Image (tube, rainbow, N blue to C red; front, side, top):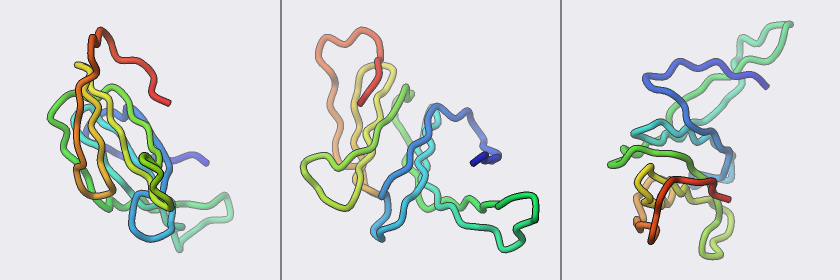
Length: 117
């Protein structure tokens, strides 16, 4: 699938997960200063050349620190929904439980951001 979508700022990361209360799968888009959760739906005007999708923003979180990367997961043994974890350039991990901020923690002895898994 190829997606073309105009944004106001660069895209640092994309993830798919259960990020809204229903059982659907949504797209998380990480920008330097915000994370946006969008829904994808098939365009009714699909052509013979392929399937086209509409992208609609469901919610977003403004980030206090410049983001580096993110990962999604059912942290804390939660079932049937995913949380978003954003790592900032200065070593803070911020956790978002769907459309709410959960908490943030600094990584001790942090030097440079690295991959999250």
